[in-house]
Image (cartoon, rainbow, N blue to C red; front, side):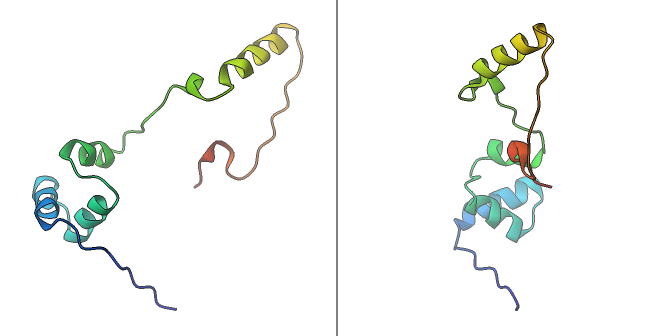
Length: 92
């Protein structure tokens, strides 16, 4: 089965600007715009491949988990970690 990409019509001025500024192909610029990358700074951040790392302690329940782990370690206990294919929501 042949797949066909259907790309919504984008703001051509913005697409051209991104093409020129970042030396992108038209399709790459259109996809970036379609995904919501509409400013030079957003595109630069995305293309730099620098990971956006959030504070892990901002996750719900993380501080409680850290406290529990520290207590178990201090008492000489054991910790068993269960995971599956997408543990950490990272897929390769």
